[in-house]
Image 1 (cartoon, rainbow, N blue to C red):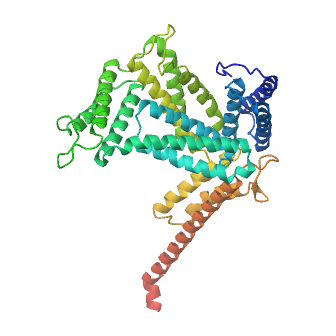
Image 2: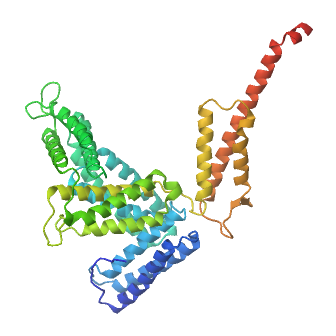
Image 3: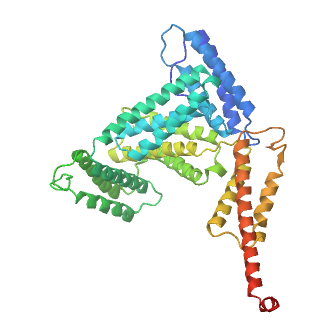
Length: 455
């Protein structure tokens, strides 16, 4: 499990709780690894209830006593992280436990944004929007969730929102014309870092990005960004400093061409491998993602991130990494946390048991919308394949429910709603096609000379 090296609890009650929490965590890991069957809502709920019971006992054991973080806290965190991802996997995305993993990832991303001081308004807007949604989830499901979890999540959301407010203040110091330039510089910097970590390094790609930086540099007068009336814009020095960092980084990247020293190759290869796997998942998340699997990626990233000493990566002899290596590894860590964040956001409120049906319906809906946008069909017969597929999916229902064995998986409402939308689109297209056919028949009858003569 690779639990970080933290002290064992001294209290006998806490040691007993640790044993039970470890057993719960191990059951969750086994459940995650089992690919022979779908994860059932009742299995997750049972383990969640057991974890909450241990939280109550832990609170009782620590009541009125001072305590420092020990292994109980770490294992408990692992349990809730896994449970949170399991709640997403079974389609219960709108319940408080599902918010735990997202708040963890957002906090980690904000830590990195603060440390690097390299972020854009778009980064903050996305996370703030997510936090507002999570805040609503937590308050809405508060009476159905553990008071401990509700309070914990409430504090986490508030902490993240306050961090975002602090970061936003830095951006607000920039004059409006400079905010766009700042956004562009962050985008160029990330693009260079991406080019730097590709399997095949392209000097041309980096040189094109460097040329964009030089164009921005040419906008300055005497080293300052100024307004039309010649006055120095607020935040000029800060943006100029960022520009210099970008230019320096472009020179370093062109000089090093993606070559990482042997001492840091193992960590680099792990991070690149995670990046490539998460990138594939982000292209087709609905078809290939089991949210619980994100736990393994998170843990690998956490271990590498937390191995830093005073913010620096060290080699086996304790020597800190040079600037190029440091920035390259940190870029990959942040990129990977960003992927995990977006994969969590893309999680559908449907159990993995129903995802094959849900995904087919989504594909059908996209096809029907495309047909509608292209002007519909010339004949109702062209809709037969869609109608047959929709009817075959509809016939899978038992008493209006999609069953998997004897189970009724979560997400029935979402799947049924999508099915109805497809039927409605199909009906609209058929009606439009039939009306068009009737108009053509009438027009053909009017144009028929024999019919005209008879009249």
